[in-house]
Length: 261
Ligand SMILES: *[C@@H]1O[C@H](CO)[C@@H](O)[C@H](O)[C@H]1NC(C)=O
Ligand SMILES: *[C@@H]1O[C@H](CO)[C@@H](O)[C@H](O)[C@H]1NC(C)=O
Ligand SMILES: *[C@@H]1O[C@H](CO)[C@@H](O)[C@H](O)[C@H]1NC(C)=O
Ligand SMILES: *[C@@H]1O[C@H](CO)[C@@H](O)[C@H](O)[C@H]1NC(C)=O
Ligand SMILES: *[C@@H]1O[C@H](CO)[C@@H](O)[C@H](O)[C@H]1NC(C)=O
Ligand SMILES: *[C@@H]1O[C@H](CO)[C@@H](O)[C@H](O)[C@H]1NC(C)=O
Ligand SMILES: *[C@@H]1O[C@H](CO)[C@@H](O)[C@H](O)[C@H]1NC(C)=O
Ligand SMILES: *[C@@H]1O[C@H](CO)[C@@H](O)[C@H](O)[C@H]1NC(C)=O
Figure 1: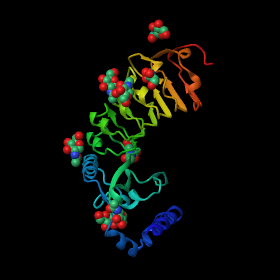
Figure 2: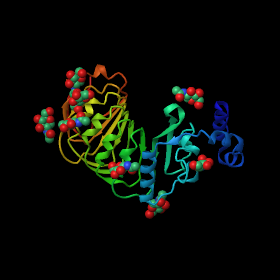
Figure 3: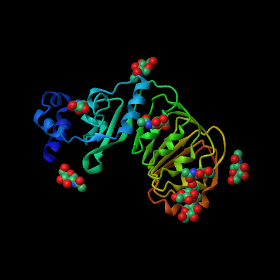
Figure 4: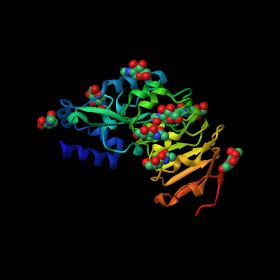
């Protein structure tokens, strides 16, 4: 079973759709159907609610009518290979001895959504990546978003209001990219706890001054871009020797004193 799974991946990667449709390996599929893992029912209900409200249907490749975490959603192929499957989810089906799937990625690109992020997103507690770039969402982050403790990446949109301080408790975050929003300051000091953060990009905070001190322990950063964020601070107060991985720094249009060492 393991080896047939690997061969499926190899073939799909090289020959894409047609091969998958024509050779859907009826025998393998039948054998696996018996013990196919199931999507977490709370997550499935939440996703169906969200898609229904948007008037979106999942594309056939990942199966909204049946088991959500089947088809391409459950293979190990990276979704970057399939930019046209949109919206798209990816699942991790290794839970409970390979019987339970959790939704780990949700991508919605270049759609013309409006309004706030749906609060049901908070039910997908195993979500690691949420790509909503250029999707048209706006407004404030829903408070239920604070339940996404596994989130590793959070990205742009037309969000407003304060950057919620609950981001400070999402300690798995590696990548925050909030450059195209109209956030109010200050930047929450709680972000100082995100010691796994590698990439922090915030742009154009419209009000409310922040202190630079919150970055002093973010020593995993390789990119720090805080442009026009109403930040005051003195670089000499930071121990830049701790920032061994930092390769890109942009603090322009702030109130920063001192030259870099
Ligand atoms: C999901 O979240 C919403 C709002 O946070 C809640 O009302 C709902 O009961 C939750 N459960 C499911 C299965 O959607
Ligand atoms: C969709 O789910 C149904 C059952 O839930 C399954 O029979 C079918 O093979 C799935 N389709 C894909 C493309 O995985
Ligand atoms: C896990 O699944 C395998 C194969 O389905 C089975 O042999 C094994 O006993 C299961 N382990 C547990 C702890 O349930
Ligand atoms: C979004 O709207 C623009 C213009 O209104 C249209 O050209 C584009 O196809 C739409 N995109 C989607 C994904 O619906
Ligand atoms: C973040 O800090 C605020 C006060 O600045 C506090 O009320 C809140 O509980 C903190 N949240 C987390 C998740 O640390
Ligand atoms: C950082 O996290 C610790 C516990 O993990 C908490 O006690 C502390 O208040 C947090 N700091 C901030 C600034 O949120
Ligand atoms: C940085 O970490 C040290 C040691 O854990 C702690 O005392 C200090 O308060 C932290 N600074 C910030 C700005 O969170
Ligand atoms: C700029 O920073 C200095 C001290 O670092 C402070 O006195 C001053 O008020 C700040 N100016 C603004 C506009 O925030």
